[in-house]
Amino acid sequence: IVSSSSDAKALNFTSNGAGITFDTNGRIVTTGTLGIITSGNTGIGTLTPTAKLMVVGSSAGVPVLQLKGLSGQTANMMEILNAAGALLFSVDNSGNVGVGSSAPTDKLDVFGAVKIGADFSGIGSSNPAPANGMLVQGSVGIGTTNPGAYKLYVNGDAFFNGSTSTFAGDL
Image 1 (cartoon, rainbow, N blue to C red):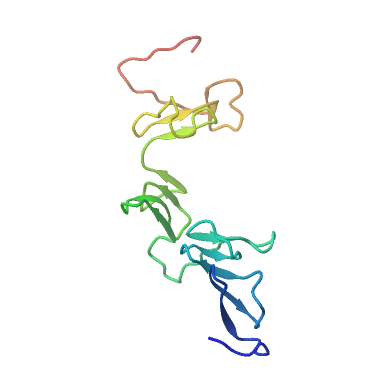
Image 2 (cartoon, one colour):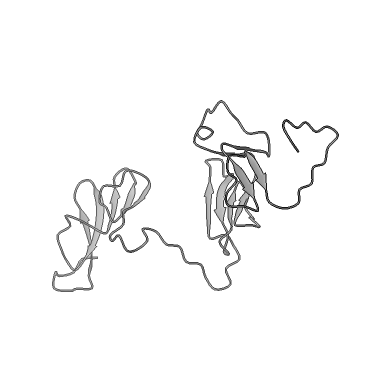
């Protein structure tokens, strides 16, 4: 669509040899709002995207990316899949986040093992979490905001079930 530069509602397509850029108001495109370069990368807020989709914010006071569902939305708001199409991450329409779960039932629903802590994070860590288990570096407080020096601090009743229990120290 080409129009005169006096038409403020015009949408101009410019081919600059590096792809297609879009801009409004009939301006010469030196900085743009949307760019598709010859590699197929698309930039919103940039003319030089380095990924298939790159979004660059325009103001510190507004979100860089915002997704808004429809009234009565039943499908997930967002899903991230791997190359084989397997779900990696989802956000449902009530704000529940699923890691490996397409139907999270809580604010954070993780399918699989979890590691928490700087020394436990990262690919190739020497401390893999047990299947469907958890490794935590540091202290855990249940029913308290201050577990102090204890690795596990439970404020309230606790139940332990098992055939063997080993305790070190005072009970």
